[in-house]
Length: 67
Image (tube, rainbow, N blue to C red; front, side, top):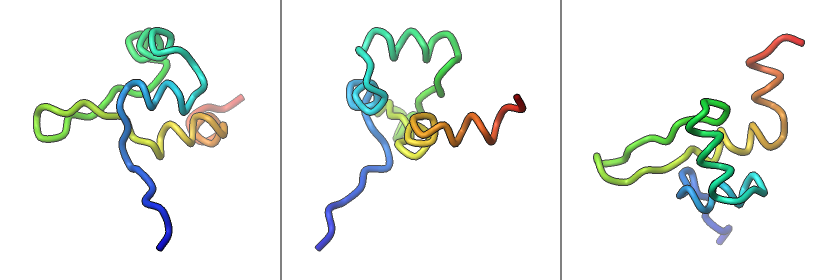
């Protein structure tokens, strides 16, 4: 059976996905340079792994911005 792929991640895991320290990740989220988290069930705060992967690969940049 293939391993499960997460669809949401915590702030710490999200920072690791982008190879940065937690405080850097949170500063960029606060500045609007990274996506805001979603609230699940009104309590859990998580980031979309799909969005973070698109940022990491540059895919989201190509789709969102014209150079």
